[in-house]
Length: 165
Figure 1 (cartoon, rainbow, N blue to C red):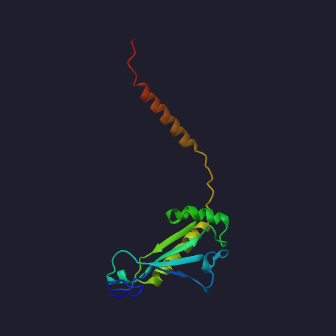
Figure 2: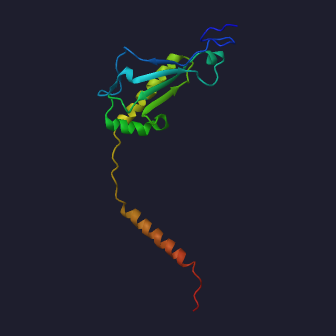
Figure 3: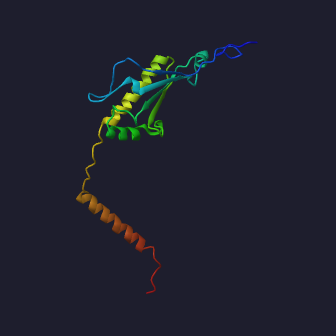
């Protein structure tokens, strides 16, 4: 039996995960000062896991979004540092953030969900953390601490062997 390329000998065509890169769209606005160029974001469409009947086996609806944070000219260095901490396990050793969206049945909804999650992550990284201002302990807390220490000391002193008077 002669099998054409791209088809399995059983029944269906074999589909590779497709790669889609956004071209020709407007800039993705993160904050008034930060915008990402769509060419900085790559999308791979993969098959989703979980329930979904035959649709899950036939259609690559899950989206794997990749953003090269380390080489992005759009982000300032301090935002990149905070973004690396916030990304956690989603950040690869090469400095690429990988976000997978597969909660929806439609590919377009998964694309929008993944992009929304990336934008939210970058927005959170743009906020500078408020510096902690150390506070002095109150007079009452100092007194309570010293009273507790002396009470504990008295308790420990009672634990000794009885004296030979």
